[in-house]
Image 1 (cartoon, rainbow, N blue to C red):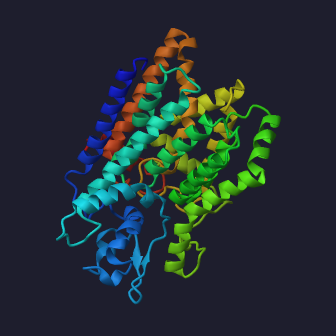
Image 2 (image 1 turned 90 degrees about the horizontal axis):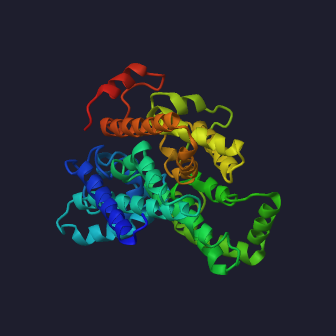
Image 3 (image 1 turned 180 degrees about the vertical axis):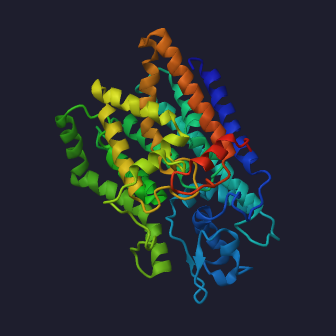
Length: 432
C-alpha cells in the first residue's frame, strides 16, 4: 500500500464491505429471536442504553415479557421494577453514538423503544465500525514491526482465518469486537507515545481511561493492560526503567483517575441494582483454578479453538519459533497465550456458551497478530516447496474457518463430550 490514495480506497472499500456484510447477515432476522442483534447476552449489554427509555423501571415496560422475548439477557425485580444485568456497561458505551442515531430514527409509535428493528440494525453498524477501526489501529501498530507488504495479508488472515469477522458480522451485539478495537487502540497509543517516555500527565490519564474501558468491556480483559506493559521489553533494566515511570506518584495518580472515571458509572449501576457499590453480579458462575479444561477448550468439537481456527496452530508455531530465536515479543506473546488459555479453560463454562470457536480469544488477536506478521515476513527465507506448502495451508485454513462460520447456526448442536458425529454434520452442512 505505497500509494496513499490507493490505500485509502482499499480501506474505504473494506469499511463498506464490513457494514454491508453485517447488515446482510441480519437483513431477514426478526428482532425477538436468537438471530437478532439484541438477544440474550446482547440484550444484557443493551439494557444499559434502552433502560433510559423506561426510566430504569421495568414497571414502565409496555409488556412485562420484554425480558423473556429478548432471551433473558437481563432480569427485572417485579416489586421494585429494578433492571438487573450481570454484564458491565463497556459495550453499551461503545454502542452509545449508534444508539442515539437509532433513537432519532426510531418510529414514535414503536411498541418497544430501544429494542426496535432500527436499534437492532444500529448494533450491526456499530460492530462493523469498531471492527474497521480496530483493524485500522492494528495495521498502524504493526507498521512499527513489519513491512507494509506483509500487513494486508495479516488483516486478511485475521478476517477469514479466525472468528473475528464472525463477531463483527454475526454476533454483533457481543463485547468482543468492541474489545478488539480498544485493545488495538491501546497498543497503538502506547507505541506512538514511546511507552510514556515523556511522562506527560495526559498520556497516563488516557492509559487509565483505555484500561478502565477495557475492563468494563469484559472483566477478564484486565490481563491485557498488564501484558502490554511488557511489550518491546528487551532487558530487565528496560523493564525496571518502565516500571519506575509508572509508579511515580503523579503518573500513577493519572492512571488511577482515568480508571476510576471509567469505573464510576458501573459503581452507580451496581448501587442501583444490588444496593452495593461493589458487587459480583455473576452469582455462582466463576473460575475453577484447580480444574482447567485446556484440552477440551482447544480441541473439543464444542467451540474448540484449534478445531474452528486451525490457523492458530500456525500462530502457536510462530510464537514458539520467535521465542526459540529470541525475537522481540516472542516470549511475551507465547506466555500471554499460555496464561489466557489457562484462565479461559478454568471458567465454569469452558465452551463459553453459544459461540463460534473460543470467543474469548477474539480481542487477544490484536497481540497474536505479531506472530502472524512474523511468520509471513519469514516466508521468503523458506525453500520454494515449503513456502508454497505453507501458503496453501494458510489458504485452506482461511477457507475452512470461513465456511464453518457461515454454516453454524448460533450454537453447536452436539454435546460437550467430544461429539464428533455432530461436528461431521456441521462440516457437511451448507453455508447459510
